[in-house]
Length: 347
Ligand SMILES: NC(=O)c1ccc[n+]([C@@H]2O[C@H](COP(=O)([O-])OP(=O)(O)OC[C@H]3O[C@@H](n4cnc5c(N)ncnc54)[C@H](O)[C@@H]3O)[C@@H](O)[C@H]2O)c1
Image 1 (cartoon, rainbow, N blue to C red):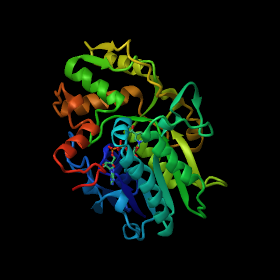
Image 2: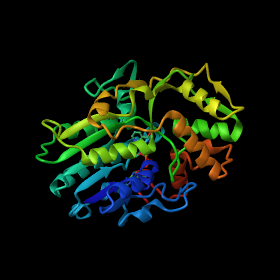
Image 3: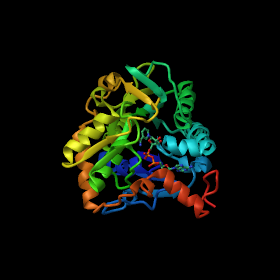
Image 4: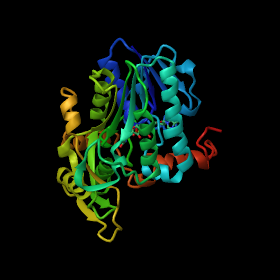
């Protein structure tokens, strides 16, 4: 099987590569990424893409049918992938995450790709703290990032797929260690705060709900989507990926990290404005359809993997919230150095 992974040089892709290499031992793996964060290898003792057979350094907006020749499966991760970047770079977010994704889907169908896995997001539920949202519930995307994912999914729902199997995985918020670590993810941020200053500063009032998933369990879900059977009507499926008992309030995440890193205090900003982005998600469909591929990392496992990873990097950057570990800062620094233009193309 020939698998093309877009966005493979990111946080998730750098973990996924090893999982795919191990699971589909004989497969031909191709990476396709423009490399915004390619330089930020963190605490890894090898470059994940060494496990690939081919790497393209190219923009997803410029992909051609040639790149997709003889490709059996596409895992589409490339995106401007959080709310702060989406807010700052609204136009390129729409172009990259939605217009280019739709173009990639079209080209994939033309080229005979018969498996397509789209990295979608539970953030499309927006504001939903009352009852856990199911796949059939109305979406309420509140940000440019969430809207871009929702519009790509909308396009996918009407596709005529024949025998092909396309899946949108609506991921929970990611956490955990990666060879390309991000510290702009809530749990990762809290662990880094606790390790560097023994104090977790929660910027919100701590009340919003978020479902969480370890980055390794995201890779497991992608493997499931690459292998799943299509029973009637399921050639296209949008599915929430996570575990129903992994819906947490932000303050509980902070307190759990503090419990595992002795001497850590938690400082919650009680005066912060209410963050509308608060949602609980129902994962019963994933539990029903993906037996054998369920998330296996507990919250504590993910925290311990981060502690071990950061300690092995001798991480002591107190000012990490202004560093390259924050994707928005990394993009901004490329722009300040005139490496990227405002549409996020390399100059
Ligand atoms: N991290 C999360 O919490 C989370 C949750 C839900 C869904 N997702 C989705 O999973 C996917 C992977 O997320 P991640 O955390 O690894 O993000 P990331 O930002 O770490 O990686 C994204 C990768 O896409 C590449 N990319 C961006 N724009 C591109 C372009 N124009 N052309 C080619 N490559 C481009 C980047 O260079 C980067 O390597 C994304 O689609 C994201 O929206 C992530």
